Structure formats: C-alpha cells, structure tokens
Amino acid sequence: MNYAITEAQQALRQEMENALGASPAPGLSISSREKLLPSLKALAETSYAKTIVKEKYDRISVMLAQKSMAVKSPSLALGLMAGMTIPSRLLAAYASEELKKKYLSPLLEGCASAAVAVSEAGMNIENGSLTTSATVAGEDAWTLQGTKNYVWNAPLADFFLVAAETEQGPAWFLLERDTAGLEIGSADETLGFQGCAMGSLTINNCQVDNDLVIGPCSNRNSLTALRKWQNEALISIALGLIERCYITALSYAKQHKSGGRPIISYQEIGFKLAEIMTLDQTAQLLAMKASWAQETNSRDTDALLGCAKVFCCEAAEKTASECLQIMGGAGYVKDNLVAESFQDAKYLTIAGVSSEISRMMIADAVLEMY
Ligand SMILES: Cc1cc2nc3c(=O)[nH]c(=O)nc-3n(C[C@H](O)[C@H](O)[C@H](O)COP(=O)(O)OP(=O)(O)OC[C@H]3O[C@@H](n4cnc5c(N)ncnc54)[C@H](O)[C@@H]3O)c2cc1C
View (cartoon, helix red, strand yellow):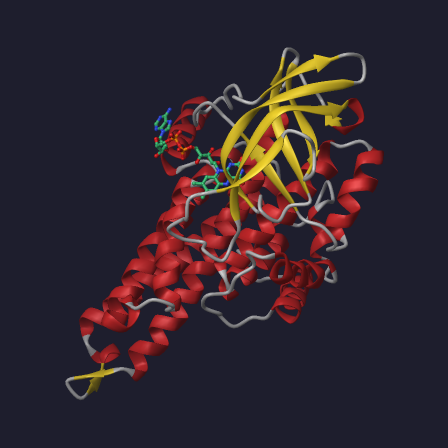
C-alpha cells in the first residue's frame, strides 16, 4: 500500500501554512472581529475555500489543510470551521444561486463570517426533531421561534443559518444579524477553545422572507451532511492537537533535566512518548482510511467515519493528558500550550456526533453489514 501524500495534497497544506503560519501558537484568539477577519482573509487567499465547496473534492487534502490550522491553534481551526467552512458547505450544497451570490461569495472572499444553529431536542441517531420551529406567515414569509444556547461564532457572525422544523420537514433560515426579534446573548465561558467566540440565540417571532429559506425538505439529508462535515473537521482538529502536544512534550523531554539527566532518558517518559506516537500514527491512518472510504463510496464509509471520530478524538484527549504529565508542573501552568490543548481536547469527544452516539451508530452499521 502507498500512504504517500500526493503533490496536490502537500501543496494545499503548504498554502495553508504559508497563509496562517505553521508553528504551534499558544493562546491564539479569534474571538473578536479584528482578530477573526485577517484569518478569514488569509484563508480566502488559499485554494482551500474553492476546494471545500466543490461537490467532489479531495478529502485527504482538506483534512491535512484543517490539521495544519489545528497544529498552529485548535481555536483557530474550530473558529474557521464554525464561521466559514461549515456554513459555506451548507450554502454550496443546498442554497439557490441567488442566495449563494449574496451569502456564500462574501464567506469565500473572507469578507464575512457566519454561524450555524441546530436546536435539536436531544442527541440521537435519527437526527430527531428540532426545537426551533417555523410557521407560514402569509404568502411570502415565515415566522421563526426558538432558542439555541451554544453557538460558535455567534457574537461575530454577519448572518446565521438556523435549522427549524416546519410542517413539511426541516428547513434552513438565513437570519441577518439585525433581524428584528433575534437576540444574540453572551454564553457561559467554556473549558476549552477559549480563543473562539461563543454565544446564544433567542429567536423571538422573527419574520423571514421566502427567498431567505432553504427547504423545507421532506428528508433530513442536510442535517446528516452537516454532522458528517462537523465530524470530518473535528477529526482533523484532533490530529492537529495530537501533533502540537507531541512535538511540544518531546522537545521538553529532551531539554528538561531531572536528577542531572534529560527526562527522556527515563524509561517511564520514553514509554509515554512511544504510546503517544502509536496513538498518533494509528489516528492518522484511520482518518486517512475513513477519507479514502468516502472517496471510493465504500459500503463501510459511515462506520469508518464513526470509528475515526471516536478514535482520533479520544486519542487527542489521551495525548494531551500524557503530554501534560510529561511536562509536570511546567505543563500545568496557565497559558501553556499543552494545558490549553488538554482543555480543548474534551470538547472533541462531545461535539459533532459524540463518542457515545458514534459508538451506537457504528454498532448499527456493523449489524447492517454482517
Ligand atoms: C461549546 C459548544 C459549542 C457549540 N456550538 C454549536 C454550534 O455552533 N451550532 C450548533 O448547532 N450547536 C452547537 N453546540 C451544540 C451541540 O452541537 C449539541 O447540540 C449539544 O452539545 C448537544 O447537547 P449536549 O451536549 O448537552 O448533549 P445531550 O444530548 O444532553 O447528551 C449528554 C450526554 O448523553 C449522551 N447521550 C445523549 N443521547 C444519548 C443516547 N440516545 N444514547 C446514549 N448516550 C446519549 C451524549 O453523548 C452526552 O455524553 C455547541 C455545544 C457546545 C457545548
């Protein structure tokens, strides 16, 4: 088997590193407009933006590009995923040409950012009903009502893609920031990803014109696609987080001395690094296999994506914890890259499709296959 990265895949990764920087940066924040916009602009100047909105794109290229953002900063990768990548993908796949022109183009040009809000009643396998609802208001408009507590990039977004339940099935509503009845509240502080902006939405009888609605649709495919895109991005962030922790802890273990010797010379530390390398290599291979299965429409695609989500995100959690242990007290202090990653990593197993639900979905897929 040939696991070599192609020239095209390497080229996109290089473009990303040139635009956004490659070295791990602690405490990087894009939680204000002044900080987010330059990153969006830099991203727009790479071919990443054009790649992610293609119907067929090289998944491994995108994964490596997103991973390189996360090596620099998981907050940077998550903030750009929430504010640009995911809303762009939704618009490219489901919106009319008019809506694409008005809302997708500014996203791809790095002039605007968005946020996506899906207010599901509870996490479940079938993409259950949404608590935000929409009813027809005359011939040309809808009335929207609901709340969503946690929304990445809400404090900065120029517009929102809100999923709501209608009598005909789910639909997406485009709400501009100044829509009457839309309240953007501050959210609770999060344990990790503190470089990203987060807020809540209260949607109080918002009137939305027909031409700002995508759907309604009798199936729930757009919600399934959204989960898949979120999972792909979270897997890439997990891989980047593993790499940034590993290189930091390895370098520390070589330099830091205890008892007159670099700590890497102690077998206990060497074994930890060996374990992390094993996790890192396995995570990368599984993520690549899941991407490759999607490219080739393999029948185990969904199960493999679930396996990769569970393994890579849990490996990130374990890696961050072990790297912090290697660094001892120096790893535990605030504003330290590994301590920051330790806090970020927990979110990865909760977000997108959680580890619990992913395992249930893998089990269902296994039952179907064998
Ligand atoms: C920081 C943050 C940012 C977010 N940003 C966004 C955003 O930008 N846009 C957006 O739409 N949403 C966002 N969300 C919301 C997120 O996508 C989910 O809607 C939300 O996390 C689900 O609620 P919950 O985590 O409280 O899970 P719950 O459904 O309450 O689950 C709690 C626990 O129970 C488990 N569980 C739940 N159901 C089952 C089951 N049937 N079987 C077994 N185990 C189960 C879960 O895996 C989890 O471990 C964000 C959430 C957070 C925390």
